[in-house]
Amino acid sequence: MFRTLFTVIFLSSILWARVIPASERFLLYLPLLKDKKVALVVNQSSVIANTHLVDFLLSKQIRVKKIFAPEHGFRGGADAGHSVKDSIDKKTSLPIISLYGKKKKPTKRDLEDIDIIIFDIQDVGVRFYTYLSTLHYILEASAKYKIPLIVLDRPNPNGNYIDGEVLDRRYSSFIGLDPVPTVYGMTIGEYAKMLNGEGWLGKGLKAKLKVIPIKNYRHQTLYTLQIKPSPNLPTQKSVLLYPSLALFEGTVFSAGRGTKQPFELYGHPKYKDKSFSFIPKSRVGAKYPKLKNRVCYGVDLKSKRVKNGQIDLSFILDAYKKYPDKKSFFLKNRFIDKLSGSNKLRLQIQNGYSQSQIRASWQRGLKEFKKIRERYLIYK
Image 1: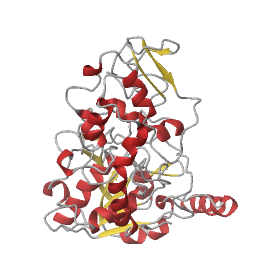
Image 2 (image 1 turned 180 degrees about the horizontal axis):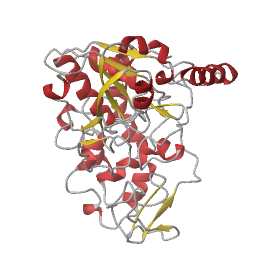
Image 3 (image 1 turned 90 degrees about the vertical axis):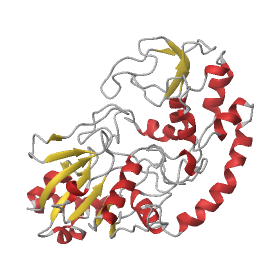
Image 4 (image 1 turned 180 degrees about the vertical axis):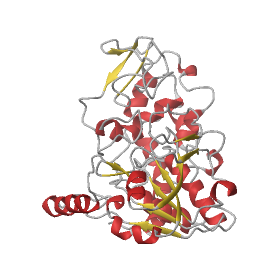
């Protein structure tokens, strides 16, 4: 099996010079795992060809002791925002410890029998995607308990630009812990280096971190995901629109959860234009979608050309303009502030700012962040 898998990957890399995620460069990290007790932070995206990283490592007699599962769970089917429970993997009998339930961080007890941790999860390059927060807490635990961490790097499908408001630390939460813009233009490996290098883990913590790099990748590489990174990002279009449409999660509008086009449309029953409609329904990954079973009117973006290289605020500005009750547009819990990084975007929209005015207010923070980012880039 090992020889066949190696041959397939080697030949395909020669024929197409394709982007090769770090997980497939196993000759670089297998020697580091020899005779080690290993913990994995993985989900459904953690694969080598068609083989899950867990199964591959076990086939190579690596001593995998446990699995840490992020939001959506080890197999990636849990609803967004819903707790994931500890369990046992039916295939391998390995314990699965949830990092999206009662706790978000591994405890000392969780790691007391572990020599090394591997993190291998596909990111989409957006600050409020919670796998980043899981990475932050894994790095923190790695540093605190002096357990080395290996990050198997993966391409960022939104890695070709940097955009959005830099998060104000007063608005830090699990959907945005660190002072980075909405779209930060880094791979998960580069991001890990930044967290570690900038001292953002707190209390002077610094992990023993090693990033296994991607091959044949640059930040301008337009990479199409082979496996959906989470239940409600099933297509490349949804991944590219996510930085713009996820802002609707902080409003009364639906961004398509519970439809066949999550993050490819938006709407509400009171949207003024009635030319397009959809009905959110209970589905796998969206059991209780916003506006469930209600007819919503709005905009279908499936055939719309995505503005590659920037967040598009025209969608949320359009929705606000065409929604009759302006006072109830944003959810009372101010979730929009956590998503955007502060209360500024909400206030700007309420005060009639244009897209260009809002974007202008981001520029100072983006300029400062780019200086920080430059120190940790692996790929140009």
